Length: 240
Length: 332
Image (cartoon, rainbow over all chains, first blue to last red; front, side, top):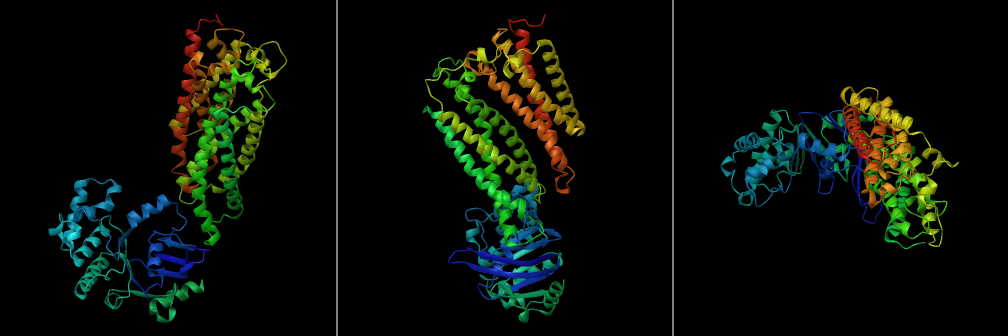
């Protein structure tokens, strides 16, 4: 379970260009659920995901991950959590050009010191799972958008994370590939992964795999436009 | 004041250290007063982020401090050619009333800074900053000492005039006078040698025992502190005499000179290194049962005990070698 308690994130604090990206968000996200953060551009979706994913620290508030408070953790512990607990799928894919698909997938696992043969086998298995194994030795710049997305997902799963964070995963995909992505996410959900997605694509948030939609606006949770299950959780938190 | 490059380096470095420590102490006060890990307030999160910077600053500052003690002694020793009457650092430290207090304070801060670095090392390895308040309380105790030391050192160098006629070490550390140094030089050799070897034997035994079983940490630490003091006295009482092969010369500074192969630096590094590592075991004892430190402190203490044992063995080996192969025979 992931719990956010009054989380705020302010950029450029006390400067003329101060900007509050997340403003007092309190939420409770269940394990093994698919949660979509929906909202217009600038509503704080990406910032909120980066806070949950330990890629940034909040200005105030606390985040608990599986009962453990993570916002106060020293950097070396955050690195470990990022590496073992989260798998990240980025809007721009962020695949590293100049190296092969296989190397890209294996890259996040190198610091773990696993045997290369074991790692390679697992990476090839993941590429096979997402039907891109035939491109394993191809450079990533030669991939199509859909293939790049599937490679990015394979890379996110290489360390066996329990939580998948996807930021606008369909932003660069056509409808066919977006539906394909939903099917991949369904498979991950069936594997009991917790999935957090920031998206304003109806293909994603209207999908039947989604358990909860959290609507964000101006850095706050918009309760009026939030699914019934989420509203219940908000009331539960407020009641405490 | 004498414009020697090392003097300027020491003064500038001390000023820089004081500024850094004052800055760290400012946040130390905030942490001691306002730290609450359970709070998610903005102030708490700012302190959490700030503590990384402070910890990094202090690691470098105290790291430099460990070196600065030897730079101070080296500089003072080099200056003996400037002063009439001075033969080594002993005479140069005597040119005004600030020299010896500065040295004593530097040794004290060396030990405290070393212990602070050990506590900081342990605290930084836990996920919940379990000893952060203790760590910064120690810093707040250390800060006035560091500032006083900077003032004393500045006073010492500023009032250092080349026309001063000072005493030589032969006069300062000679037997039969009523000063503390003379009394230390006059201590009987055989009981001092027995005390020295017994203290070393006990330290090594307890250190190895702690390394194996992790027991009697406080006893080991106290023994290390006593062995450190006995060793310092022993250097004046009989160790230096064997190095000079002159029964009346007890100076603890001449051994730092080239004529004696700079052996003094090896002796003092081994002694201070052993003292800090060994006392570090005791300093960590109260925190070893804290949940987030149970997997960190015992292993750190074992390493520290081993380091202390190695340092004290090196010190004892250097001393014993000299006693055995010296042309001087004090005990037949």
